[in-house]
Image (spheres, rainbow, N blue to C red):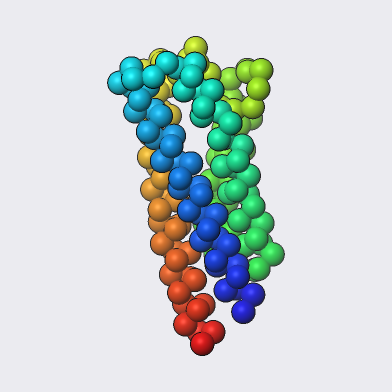
Length: 142
């Protein structure tokens, strides 16, 4: 029974993380097509970075508490990437990853887009894994 609640929490937080990723992908596409100003775009993206990382760490702490070792093991590389990415971010006055002066560099923008698509793919695969776990726990509970 505790795993059922754990699966539901992981499922819900995964949905929120996917939403953040989709917003990032749309924002980078708007930058690539010169639809939006880089300063405005970075100002709207930077506040989403720490909540995304916090949610990811939160549901991994929940996995740790529930003894979901396989789920935790699958997420450890992304946690390490998040920590490294935030530690090596550009020098900025506030929290966030995206610097308006460098985001329009083609290489930086391409790297951010690639990162967004890869993380979205990871979150989608994790979403379906957690959905499967939730369904299995609901079936076995009844």
